[in-house]
Image 1 (cartoon, one colour):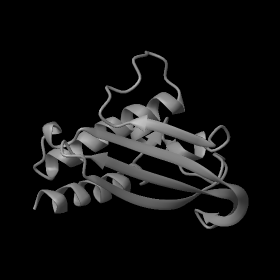
Image 2: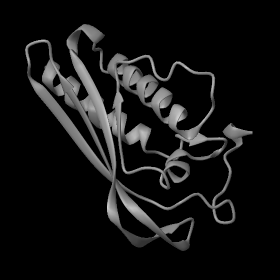
Image 3: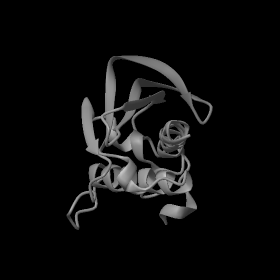
Length: 147
């Protein structure tokens, strides 16, 4: 049962974290990061960035840790069920074309891999790949949440 809950929490975490609701200043967070992103590791059990700076990177870390803990709670899991938890975000090297709000854009596929280790050493992993184009306010709609 706990195995299924952990797998579900990882899946739901990646779904919510990569969604349009992950924004920075009203725009999709990952479009703001793609220019400086090659590979980025986040300790999901950490407290997030201990800084008052508001940057896309700090927002990505803070959002990841908060959303992960939220999904654990929704799955009925305690932090004591998890010894380690990490998110690895990596941009694939070749750009390709995809669509953003109906506009053809050059961008990259980005892999998100969330993994945990139980107190007994059992590992769990979930992966998701998403097309990300660099932020362009001409074709992106700003969320009312960011204003």
